[in-house]
Image (cartoon, rainbow, N blue to C red; front, side, top):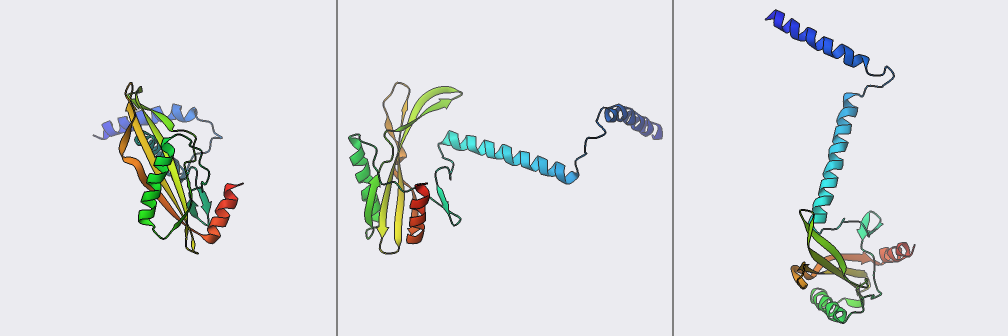
Length: 197
């Protein structure tokens, strides 16, 4: 048994000696902490990449892409100019306004806008082959909340079509209320200033 163990040890040393001669003497060896940290950072990076791919596949946006950070809190931009001029635009804005008034009957609407000129179109792929198209339109309502501040609400309209078919509204994503920001007066001023930078 001792002979076998010694033979294995000798073989390992013979393999290790040439390999150690191939490394540069000036190369700094990493500590265990550096190795673990490197592995951890690589795993986090891979997980982030994977989660972004999953979010993209499911149609979720990166949470803070167009948001403005004030005092550690992220706020949606304030939109007051309506860029969407198609016939259906007024109907979509009215649907948002109706839902908003049902939830906040005391708030006074200041702006109701669709801040895009047309639908945002994305190709839907399955196994790297385009199988359909998804279109998205956003509507924002800004309302005065008494003398305390403002309410900024975001609605989404999404429709889908298979290649060669017509668009149909996506269930649960047609006029759905995506988000609401309560904006104190002091933050509102900062938000407007930062948005104009």
